[in-house]
Length: 394
Image (tube, rainbow, N blue to C red):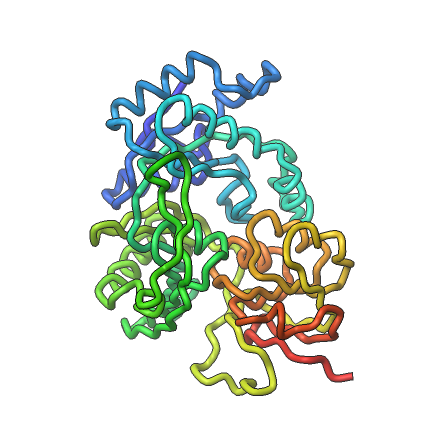
């Protein structure tokens, strides 16, 4: 009914869980855990009920007790997730900071239900991947939650001589992958040289010590401009990235965390679309354009549609350029109609930027005050390769 993470395969628990199992078997620092396999989901779906049966809840309690009943992360591992043709980044559910068998059982149900969500179906329909499935089998990965001091995402080199890209912020990595913070960016060249850009890390997410889930809080002013990683940590991460890419036999998109100076690997999946290069330190277009982080290749001219939240979604028409504070997974259905996306905060390794690259629309992330500096209905040009937003020339 439940398998240990170490014994999980892609056939029983999905590519996400299987990749971590392989890395754990190779001695990499992967948090311990277990997997509720596809078979359990199939049984629940066949019975037309998705609440977790008592027998499975008892099994959850046994495995949690064996781990010492810690707070855990409960994460989707769908049959169509983390595959070479599409990441499905952020399209299925994860629940962090869960404790106790009853709460974990409810989180498993949430992950199961996300298999048939309209958001996931829309993602696959638009991507038109060969593995598209309106309701794929859903395994669920349960792992010890790492109370991270810092965390983020790393993209390993795609071609020989390419750099490793790392984005990092304080606390749990949900803020980096969710695009709700503009992270620090580190680029590690093939010769080991490190280039860094320090982001304005104004908020952080941590496990809610008084309840279930995560809690947001402000980062003290003096800590916002301090680098999250020193050179030693950056070098360690880059080395782990190269090893993971070798073990998994292709370039990898890796989520990681650091707690008490120890690095943990939380996820590794194939890189599905080319990442634009970082711009020069002093962009040539500065002064005539708004500057952000290049997120997805391409150049588009269109009408700016400034959005404040999901209630504004109906205002977007095909070909509009979405201008918004940030994009979490709830925003990604807009990528089906938008010609480009520009955000005030966020980084190029966030889930939204990954989906923009997979959908082939330009994206520029982390443009300060862009929702006020660009007027709604203005005609603009977005260059996602260079990271610029410019008033269009008639």
